[in-house]
Length: 97
Ligand SMILES: O=C(O)C(=O)C[C@]1(C(=O)O)C=C[C@@H](O)C=C1
Image 1 (cartoon, rainbow, N blue to C red):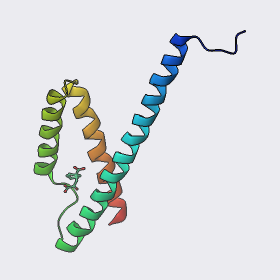
Image 2: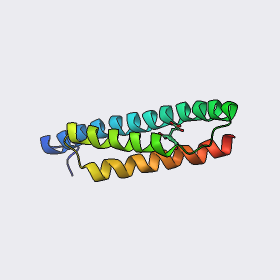
Image 3: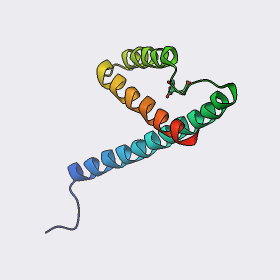
Image 4: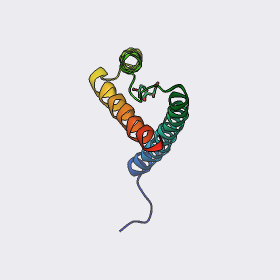
């Protein structure tokens, strides 16, 4: 067994390091988005507005589709992720109200 990784393994490790960093950033962004939504929940509470805003959800989904197209990633998969993010926020918002 060699202790020196071959160049191919090294580059695989480097690529996985890159993914590890990106994965952390994704979770950080999800946390930031959830934090903003918590603040939105407080504003809605003060104004007596319901948690769900279907028009806003549609705008978020439309934007997700546009961004997916712009970055050339699968629109349906990106939209599925945003649907989950919205549901996550609604669960959090309902818990905090
Ligand atoms: O914009 C809002 O009103 C939010 O609460 C945020 C958000 C979202 O996650 O994008 C979540 C729930 C609403 O139904 C609409 C949008």
